[in-house]
Image 1 (cartoon, one colour):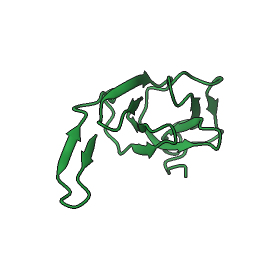
Image 2: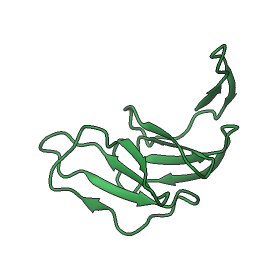
Image 3: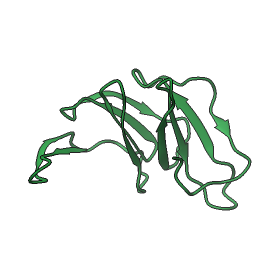
Length: 118
Protein backbone atom coordinates (compact mmCIF):
# COMPACT_ATOMS: atom_id res chain seq x y z
CA UNK A 1 0.00 0.00 0.00
CA UNK A 2 1.35 3.41 -0.91
CA UNK A 3 0.21 6.94 -0.23
CA UNK A 4 1.08 9.17 -3.15
CA UNK A 5 1.52 12.89 -3.66
CA UNK A 6 -1.60 14.09 -5.53
CA UNK A 7 0.41 16.41 -7.79
CA UNK A 8 3.51 14.38 -8.64
CA UNK A 9 2.05 10.89 -8.04
CA UNK A 10 5.30 10.02 -6.26
CA UNK A 11 5.04 7.71 -3.21
CA UNK A 12 5.31 9.56 0.10
CA UNK A 13 4.48 6.70 2.51
CA UNK A 14 4.40 2.91 2.08
CA UNK A 15 3.23 0.00 4.19
CA UNK A 16 5.73 -2.53 2.90
CA UNK A 17 4.68 -6.03 1.88
CA UNK A 18 1.34 -7.13 3.30
CA UNK A 19 0.63 -10.86 3.64
CA UNK A 20 -1.90 -12.32 1.21
CA UNK A 21 -1.84 -16.00 2.10
CA UNK A 22 -0.11 -16.97 -1.13
CA UNK A 23 -3.03 -15.89 -3.32
CA UNK A 24 -2.28 -13.72 -6.33
CA UNK A 25 -5.32 -11.80 -7.51
CA UNK A 26 -6.47 -8.19 -7.50
CA UNK A 27 -7.94 -7.22 -4.14
CA UNK A 28 -9.78 -4.09 -3.05
CA UNK A 29 -9.05 -0.91 -1.08
CA UNK A 30 -11.56 1.15 0.88
CA UNK A 31 -11.32 4.53 2.62
CA UNK A 32 -13.48 4.15 5.75
CA UNK A 33 -15.38 6.83 7.69
CA UNK A 34 -13.28 5.93 10.78
CA UNK A 35 -10.23 7.45 9.01
CA UNK A 36 -8.62 4.13 8.16
CA UNK A 37 -7.71 2.56 4.86
CA UNK A 38 -8.83 -1.06 4.56
CA UNK A 39 -7.17 -3.43 2.12
CA UNK A 40 -8.30 -6.95 1.25
CA UNK A 41 -5.88 -9.06 -0.74
CA UNK A 42 -5.71 -12.81 -0.99
CA UNK A 43 -7.03 -14.21 2.27
CA UNK A 44 -6.04 -11.21 4.45
CA UNK A 45 -7.72 -7.96 5.47
CA UNK A 46 -5.65 -5.05 6.78
CA UNK A 47 -6.55 -1.81 8.49
CA UNK A 48 -3.98 0.94 7.93
CA UNK A 49 -3.68 4.45 9.27
CA UNK A 50 -3.20 7.48 6.95
CA UNK A 51 0.60 6.96 7.14
CA UNK A 52 0.23 3.38 5.77
CA UNK A 53 1.05 1.74 9.11
CA UNK A 54 -0.80 -1.51 9.83
CA UNK A 55 -3.22 -1.01 12.73
CA UNK A 56 -4.93 -4.40 12.50
CA UNK A 57 -4.60 -7.56 10.44
CA UNK A 58 -7.01 -10.48 10.00
CA UNK A 59 -6.60 -13.74 8.15
CA UNK A 60 -10.04 -14.34 6.67
CA UNK A 61 -11.95 -17.55 7.43
CA UNK A 62 -11.81 -18.73 3.79
CA UNK A 63 -8.37 -19.53 2.39
CA UNK A 64 -9.02 -18.08 -1.08
CA UNK A 65 -8.51 -14.81 -2.92
CA UNK A 66 -10.92 -12.03 -1.95
CA UNK A 67 -11.77 -9.26 -4.39
CA UNK A 68 -14.67 -7.34 -2.91
CA UNK A 69 -14.81 -4.91 0.01
CA UNK A 70 -17.71 -2.69 1.06
CA UNK A 71 -18.58 -0.54 4.07
CA UNK A 72 -22.27 -0.70 5.04
CA UNK A 73 -24.12 2.35 6.36
CA UNK A 74 -23.31 1.30 9.96
CA UNK A 75 -19.59 0.99 9.08
CA UNK A 76 -19.53 -2.82 9.00
CA UNK A 77 -17.11 -4.22 6.43
CA UNK A 78 -18.27 -6.89 3.97
CA UNK A 79 -15.90 -8.93 1.81
CA UNK A 80 -16.23 -11.94 -0.48
CA UNK A 81 -13.99 -14.60 -1.88
CA UNK A 82 -14.01 -15.37 -5.57
CA UNK A 83 -15.08 -18.63 -7.13
CA UNK A 84 -15.36 -19.80 -10.69
CA UNK A 85 -18.25 -21.91 -11.87
CA UNK A 86 -18.14 -25.39 -10.29
CA UNK A 87 -15.85 -24.23 -7.43
CA UNK A 88 -18.64 -24.02 -4.85
CA UNK A 89 -20.46 -21.09 -3.35
CA UNK A 90 -18.98 -17.67 -2.70
CA UNK A 91 -18.47 -16.77 0.96
CA UNK A 92 -19.62 -13.39 2.30
CA UNK A 93 -17.87 -12.29 5.51
CA UNK A 94 -18.83 -9.35 7.78
CA UNK A 95 -16.20 -7.68 9.98
CA UNK A 96 -15.89 -4.90 12.53
CA UNK A 97 -14.05 -1.98 10.86
CA UNK A 98 -11.96 -1.13 13.93
CA UNK A 99 -10.65 -4.46 15.26
CA UNK A 100 -11.49 -6.65 12.20
CA UNK A 101 -13.37 -9.16 14.39
CA UNK A 102 -15.89 -11.34 12.59
CA UNK A 103 -19.52 -10.33 12.92
CA UNK A 104 -21.57 -13.51 12.90
CA UNK A 105 -20.75 -16.56 10.84
CA UNK A 106 -19.73 -16.15 7.19
CA UNK A 107 -22.57 -16.80 4.73
CA UNK A 108 -22.09 -19.08 1.72
CA UNK A 109 -24.07 -18.15 -1.38
CA UNK A 110 -25.47 -20.98 -3.52
CA UNK A 111 -23.14 -20.29 -6.46
CA UNK A 112 -19.69 -18.93 -7.18
CA UNK A 113 -19.01 -15.31 -8.03
CA UNK A 114 -15.97 -13.97 -9.83
CA UNK A 115 -17.17 -10.34 -9.96
CA UNK A 116 -16.66 -7.66 -7.36
CA UNK A 117 -19.36 -6.49 -4.98
CA UNK A 118 -20.11 -2.82 -5.16
